[in-house]
Length: 143
Image (cartoon, helix red, strand yellow):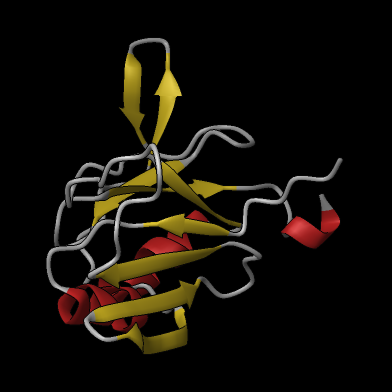
């Protein structure tokens, strides 16, 4: 069996504001922005180079057996980049508030980049959903 993670729902209190943040601030591509039924809007966006998209929605009923996430409750989604300093600079230029680059060290989170797979920066969307930038040693196609 092959399982592929292809879409992650991101809770949002204001779809237009959130769409603008991910499109203009983070550089995500807008794949879909459509009212699929009266009062039900879905926006799907994909980070450049990713095989997994995010989805924003309003008016959607909760899936059977699941409950809605509160905007700001989604934490820890990771975006991998091959140059964290360049990604940090680009996000900052686009108006995204990104933490300084940090790594996990002997005392916990420490300033500056670390070794392979150990350089991170953090940011939040307008609702407080938390994201992690992580430096990877090579593009996904080469790993």
